[in-house]
Image 1 (cartoon, rainbow, N blue to C red):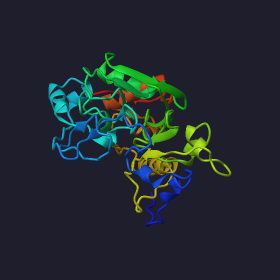
Image 2: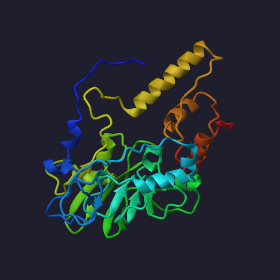
Image 3: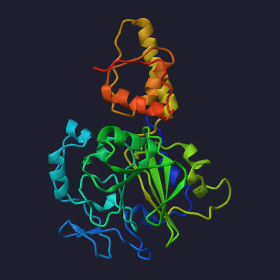
Image 4: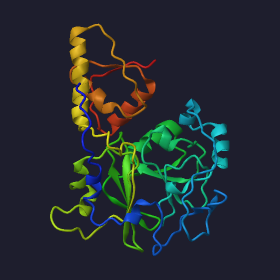
Length: 325
């Protein structure tokens, strides 16, 4: 695998394809002429104020930092429930002008929140969720399957079909593939009263295909001329939004990693190749290896994930040897 030197940063080229995005839209606040029904933080107390008409971004004042625990994944921890009730939901978890929050399960029942969106099934996004959670959860159909596998069928979960508009609490919501892990989605929300569009990317890996039909984002990037539709606010994943990050395409990276593995095994046929796995997120690499080698997978959680993905016909793992221990 080759490593290249630093290249020019192209991050700004993504946003320039959206027509006339106002500067104020990068600040996660409501515009003054838009109805703002989402609770705000009291800048002095750091608590939620459901009556304030002004927007004051404020970080939560709590220093609680829940640690990863196996019981979290099972949704069966009393300690999590206690911690959730003492934390305040930060404003950036709210979609301004709506009763929606995204990936906000560490704060118990949030006053004023009617719908809890989940972008994908990674712990740092669903952490705090328990079997006893009573809120309405909306996510992709794949993520719905992960939730039911891990938390049972008692949760109030609705799986959204991709690229299709859904009426939720009077708002039009479209789930779009985020290209991050199986089931990960972005949420495109249309606010009919103001005719404004809001995009929440969650964790995502940008590709130019996101701007091409049938992606709903293609309406914001016309092939010629100016678009009559604009995004008014973007909640953006900025994990790699820095000049030093300029990656090759995911397919190129996977093929390179697979080739390195195969070349090494040709020289060392008895070697054991170990790859760290999340419960989901490394399936494409495993699938790439599958074409040349029979695989032995010993991670119970990863096997569970693959079996669920098989039910959605996402990855045809027909000859993998599943051995759970």
